[in-house]
Length: 278
Image (tube, rainbow, N blue to C red):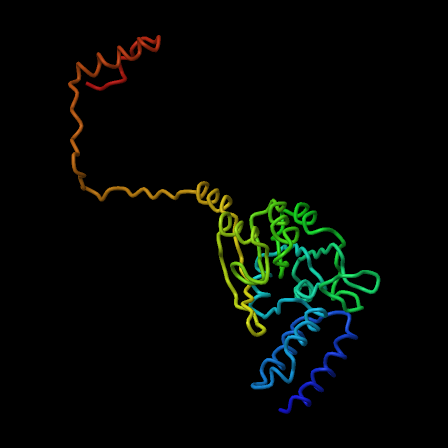
């Protein structure tokens, strides 16, 4: 397809989406638009993919969800997304019936300015106004979700993780030290969190976006320490004798009476003559 025709189709679809206010179950318009652009071989320069990414990220999110990523998130519900921006990920999850709370210190909209989402419209779902640190501290019972926290802002990643009292994190962004998560945040993940599932996400050129679930190391060790141990006791086969087995010593009748009498006297009772047969 010619680049100009492809851009015309893209812009028409984008205009229609800008008028939308909610998301329906099963749809993912961001993924569809990105696929339309990236799937055109040899047209990257003509389409100006860097600019297309910025305008789509402003309207939707800086990371692009796919079906598998949403399934993993749903499996870890209830969730709390901190720094939710336009709430695109949370909106898709809520459309699927997933329990998720979304917070942002400056929810985008006509009455608020957000430097990462400058589109003059309301988010895709309800966003509570609260700092990420305060939201993470408030909801330790939920799985923490951090989607594309800025690499140069400790307050959006490292400080949030330190404030969080729960044990499960879903981190969406670049692994190791890339475009997302501060240096101290990445170091904290390496030292105190154990990686679980990993899902490759749809990616713009030169990015390595991945969804990863992580479990706090302390919680993992505690789980292993308190894991119940199952003991299986098997009765020996009939007639079988283990190594070192000895037959019980036969006690003569007279000795048996004497032992019984002594035991009764130690207990303050008189020996009963009928306790042992002769």
